Image (cartoon, rainbow, N blue to C red; front, top):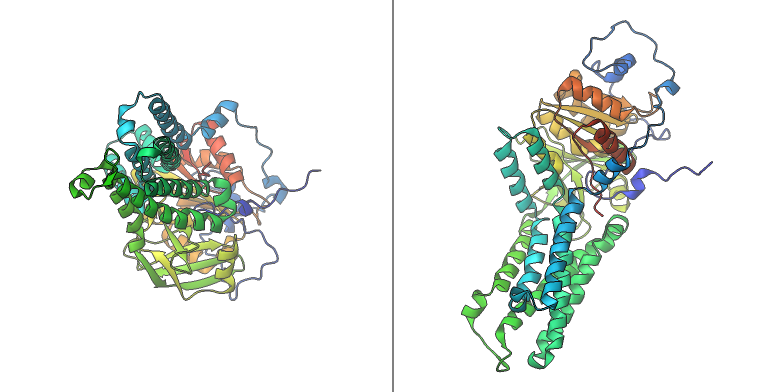
Amino acid sequence: MSPPPPPAWTHLSDTEKGLYDAHDPEKPPLENPRPLPLAHIDTKPQVLEKSPFQPLDTTLKPPPAPTSRIPKAKPKASKWVLFKLWFNTYRKFFTFVVSLNVTGIVLAALGRFPYAENHLGALVLGNLLCAVLMRNELFLRFLYLISIYGLKAWAPVWMKIGVTSILQHVGGIHSGCALSGAGWLVYKCVDILRHRSAQHNAIIASGIITNVLVIISVLSAFPWVRNYHHNVFERHHRFIGWLGLATTWAFVVMGNSWDFRYGVWRADANSMLSAQEFWFAVFMTIFILIPWFTLREVPVEVEIPSPKVAILKFQRGMQQGLLGRISRTSIMEYHAFGIISEGRKSGCHYMICGVQGDFTRDLVNNPPKTVWTRELKFAGVGHASAMFKRGIRICTGTGIGAALSTCIQSPNWFLIWIGSDQEKTFGPTITGLIYKNIPPERMILWDSKKRGGRPDTVKLLKETWDSFGAEVIFITSNKQGNDEMMQGCAEVGLHAFGTLWDF
């Protein structure tokens, strides 16, 4: 018999991956636990044996043996479905951007790209600017805004699905442009060295230093580093990236001020202001700085319903589908979590932080009175739910933190939450928000501890899809659960968006 796999949460670190499956019989019970409301789906175990929208037999019956609830092994997805899910919009964007830039570099090397000969710096900075934009909170909020209000009223479902896929996978453009910018920077540095007799030593030195810094920043963002060594990624990607930005400025200014024909420096403001490279550097700097201008130290209340979950309460209501970054310090170790709120006018919002590493463990062991956060929140793919008429939000464990606001703030979204002993694990605050805002006919709460295992999620989604008249499904689960649901939905023809693990 093969050894059991490691817990899924050990592989996770980014937003919406938070999937702590709270199955821990050794956790102490809550003090003064609140009794389950009558609306709780588990007070009548036979309810979940049928579609939630079919007439139910109100005669109480003993539940089946727990072993009968464990689903049988599911057939594997077809190779075509697996390929489509692997070659998603993220990889399509990445492949297109990198291929286009590699073609440009080859043509420039062959002397068949005149623009590159005169504007190598613009190709470097244009790519880096585009990479910055695709991760900028303000720019992404703008993209979601025009997509939601531009398509909500009239666009067919297939168009909304396509736009949502683009919004979710713009990280492919970010990665492709960052890698391409580094490629063009290497090419420019090689070009300078080839003609070093006409270049000033300061320009050559700044070009080499900028190359090294940008390449380190790009390499530190590779998934293996980012997911398994978060602090290493953050220190190198952020601080070396900032240093690379400073040396890029020096490289641009000196490159435009040096007259290689006469070997002299020119202090010509008009020449500088008319250079494309200058304005690319200006806007890249502005978009990097914007989120940091909204940085604040804010008070926070911390509730510890169980040893592996911290519930953080902040002032100010929020719209659905947003995520926030928090840290104990002003510039280091930021972690992103989904935001739960009853609406903009509710006066407060919450974050569910499941223990997955040193940072979240310290929130439980040493709860803070204040944390640092950016007031400008960023949009997750769940923010696009406002574009659709009806949908399903399915999550497991702490994934409820990214999913709940959508179902609270919209009566057209159905909640499916799969977890273990949710009431005890997540406490009265979260369960209270659910029962207060979501009627029983619009939710399924599956307690895997009481019911002997997880449900057949694809069957559950298909039944809910047909009964509720959904147009789309948003999934927040660990990698195993996400893959299972995404593959199953693709096989039966349901439009679904799952957690994205960048490659």
